[in-house]
Image: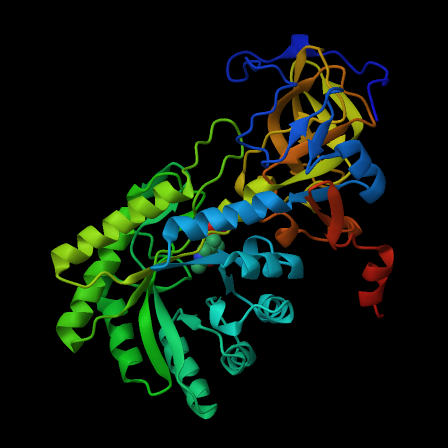
Amino acid sequence: MSRSAHPAGPRHADVLPEGHYTAPATDLNELDAKVWSRTVTRDADGALTVGGIEVARLAEEFGTPAYFLDESDFRARCRAWADAFGADADVFYAGKAFLSRAVVRWLKEEGLNLDVCSGGELATALDAGMPAERIAFHGNNKTVAEIERAIEAGVGRIVLDSFQEIARVSHIAQRLGTRQRVQIRVTVGVEAHTHEFIATAHEDQKFGIALADGQAAEAVRRALTMDGLELIGIHSHIGSQIFDMAGFEVSARRVVQLLAEVRDEHGVELPEIDLGGGLGIAYTSEDDPREPHEIAKALGDIVTRECESAGLRTPRISVEPGRAIVGPTAFTLYEVGTIKPLDGLRTYVSVDGGMSDNIRTALYDAEYSVALVSRSSDAAPMLVRVVGKHCESGDIVVKDAFLPSDLAPGDLIAVPATGAYCRSMASNYNHALRPPVVAVRDGRARVIVRRETEEDLLRLDVG
Ligand SMILES: *Cc1c(COP(=O)(O)O)cnc(C)c1O
């Protein structure tokens, strides 16, 4: 199906502001493979296909806005992480990035473990058949009920986040007549974001127990004496969307230092360290993420080196990628509605979703790219801001991008790399109906999370 018969839209290629926004050197019809999932291609009409299905067909069948998740890409990324880290390490997918029953089954089949951080995520994981011993339970304020349920289910580990929680989990485990395997989450004084990391003063946050001032050493001391706990290791998670391995290097060094102190004080070599997640992905062509095997090698080398110099046996490493697995595997498909050129500024392109399906731009100033995907176009590029339909001027999906200047209402545009933290952070603001997630694979598309309906909204409204 071709959508090339639209009347010409506004032509504003001539109003690009000076300086910062230079028109793209590349043809807008060309897709940058870095930001799209692996089975995405363009067919002869210029229409985008994923898993062998044209987006116009997907839009017709499933409506817009909708997230389309490339299942074979998701599975391939799981395998790449599992293979890269090998049998001596564990890969935990961070469920908060995006979790559904289908995702749990894929993880299970591809040999990954799963991080959860709420009763709801735990329930989803268990319901879809993830073996409890492959689940790690996180969070800075787990409720007593959540802890009981996790222990009763037999989760492989609980990551302890505070002194109170060390006592709480121990008491609950004892009451339930068991010993729970636990790690202690420490803050190493490093916070990493995107291209940089800052190695001072980041203990001022709600997660973990600070290594500084001997706090973490005290936490280990207490955990080792609690009857309800089996302390298996130390956990550190330093940030998100990280490209620079230097932050992990500092983190690993400090965690290994703690292991050495623990050995010296208690004669115990804790067998595991968890270096968390946060590995970056390409949201735009500017980003250059590393491959899992490079990350595995870098982390493995750091830990081995630090342990050798501390005279420790190398512990088993775990990592917790969320975004790096699911982020690149999905795009959000929108239909273009109102197009509003602001002379001398930019053209506002409104779509049928917005901050309710992607809050990251408003929340973190995140950058995304966008492409016209229902047809090709040879029109000149125009500078656009893609905005949603919510009652908020901060309702921005893509802050600055170029789209062809013949863009018209009814065109389909897609924002790639929306697999992580978009559906999982989606809201009902303005009583928006949260979009479906459709898994596409080998010419077949199926809904894995259905679109919300007005009935769903009204069902909760029991006044
Ligand atoms: C959020 C989180 C992750 C995953 O982060 P990504 O940026 O999605 O890789 C891993 N571990 C912990 C403890 C987290 O809080």
